[in-house]
Length: 238
Image 1 (tube, helix red, strand yellow):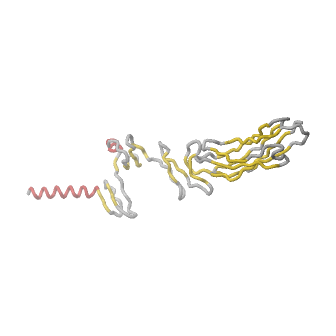
Image 2 (tube, rainbow, N blue to C red):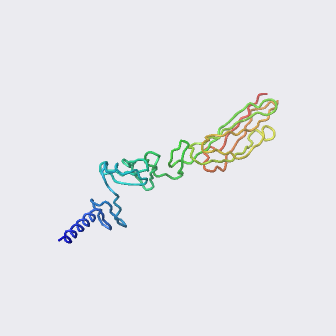
Image 3 (tube, rainbow, N blue to C red):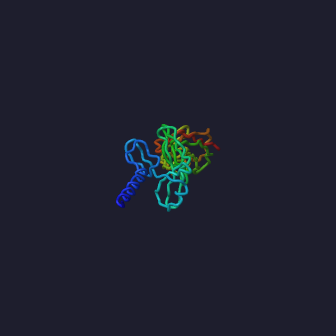
């Protein structure tokens, strides 16, 4: 009789645990503590109400489904973090990013964009930086040199260093007579939105019309050139 009662107790325990675990099931068992399967049958993670969840000691990486809030929660080692109201993407290629406190949706990028961090720290798809150069003018003076200052401006500051080459070209102003020819490469760090290029203009006492030279941008790296040529005007003062 005792053996028979022991058999019934063991059988009852087996039935109880059988209801709490399902392996290889086609349809997840609503009562299963753990439902393991393969292929397209999915994985049913542990489920419990909020009271039971909050009784669990902080365990980093633990993931549960809270039946009270109807949402996923994970433990970061010090607290529970709710996945409730995670935004959903609308197209293939949409991504999620954790900003330190919540999940944010990053929509799929478009042609010509790059994935990176802008100068505010925002992560996402960004249009490639564009470069443009200003026009400039200066009064020539009667001796020595004066500075003709151009400004190269970068838009959409994302977390990549940009370089671009520059070179002067004659207009009505002639290198060696009216100004000093110059060429080189400028570098704009991720935090830099502009850089100045100075061209030396030679003073004289010759009565002449205003003269022009050009400063051209070429071969940009990590950026496109929207405005490649700046006009420099040397204003006659004789």
